[in-house]
Image 1: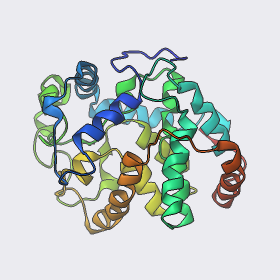
Image 2: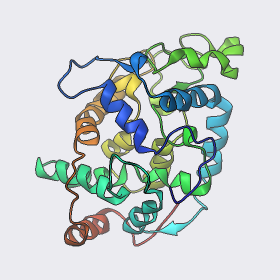
Image 3: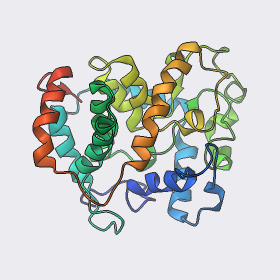
Image 4: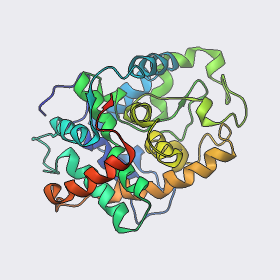
Amino acid sequence: MSHELKNKPLGSLDEWEDDILSRYPEDERENFRDYENTQRESVKEFYRLNHENQTLDYARTQREKFAKLDKREMGIWEACEYLNNLVDDSDPDTDLSQIEHLLQTSEAIRADGHPRWMVLTGLLHDLGKTLCLWDEPQWGVVGDTFPLGCKFSDKIVFPEFFAKNPDNDNPELKTEYGIYSAHCGLDNVTMSWGHDEYMYLVVKDYMPEEALNIIRFHSCYPIHREGAYYHLMNEHDHKMFEWVKKFNPYDLYSKADNPPNVKELKPYYMELIDEFFPKTIKW
């Protein structure tokens, strides 16, 4: 990889996504869960770091830090090209660049005739991984996301690793509702920090609400694949999560060995980007 990452348990960021594919095969039942039998020690080590360090205070601090959007100013397509710095030349499983991964997702959505905002969401959804280029550790960029400030669900991958999370020593944060109230709505919940939450902050003034929920919660497998935390969700959340669930197969299953033609597709996506965004935005 061209950029050294702190606390680097994964060979590449794609390794986490490959593990999700093994947990949720396309041809298996909805609630298939096979992560207990994973042979990938790097994935286990990643989740150990993630679960021990993702605390309520950490997420709040990171959100405040990055909500300033003072890291860089660039356009969406420029951000796609910038993210190509994360290509892992040593990864034997794929030779595709980050922008090719994003285009595979968005092109699959486009081919099925979904709204233009959803096609663009496919291009946007992983751009928050630019956090890695600003020296953020992997466990604070990728991984399944989940609510903080309440009891950790046993439906989160490797729940045993939360035993050493400092929030487990706080009685207020160990109950089912924690600092929240029943069906308070996810807008009032602090989520674990990562590329989902960051990208939501970057584009929240530009994209439709449905797109924002996809971007913010596409890695929240405990909710949209396992059915956890429904006690915190309100009716509007459930409505929005129908779009998250609709997006999820494109995120997981659109990868293919044949790369999209970036040069040929660029004019279409530049026009699409211009429909929703100014020439540059703050990151």
